Length: 141
Ligand SMILES: [Zn+2]
Image 1 (cartoon, rainbow, N blue to C red):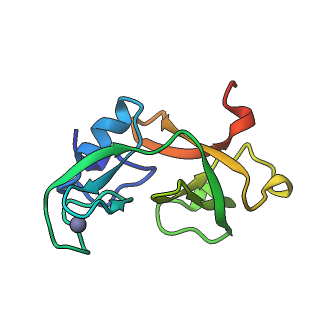
Image 2: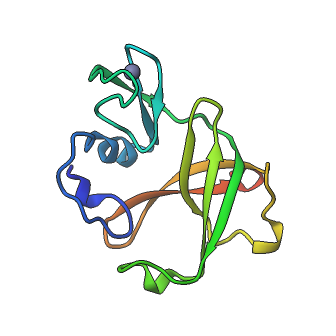
Image 3: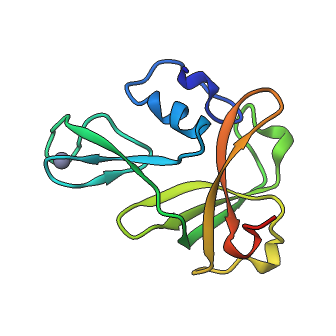
């Protein structure tokens, strides 16, 4: 599967980390870890910017992280205009922080720094695949 299947709108078809999309399609949200120095990258990288090694392995993002920061988007980039307003979240999973969208089902007034969030894979009606965060309490929905 090519990287063009990733996200609500993808501007890139070719990348060395296209396997990310295949893993998403199987329900796994993954980062890459450098086999030489252990650093973890999200978005996944094929090369380590710290030790310049290219021996990377895929690692699954942990089940639960904590909201580190967020912002509300009212003016969207091209391709995302129909979605505003939406919330972008930075979620801390310990060894790695993951940036992504908070579920639109989450009331803005209930968003709190430090809240537990879980990443889930979303397949959209047009076949695009992405992920977003939901509060841990809502995982059973
Ligand atoms: Zn490295």
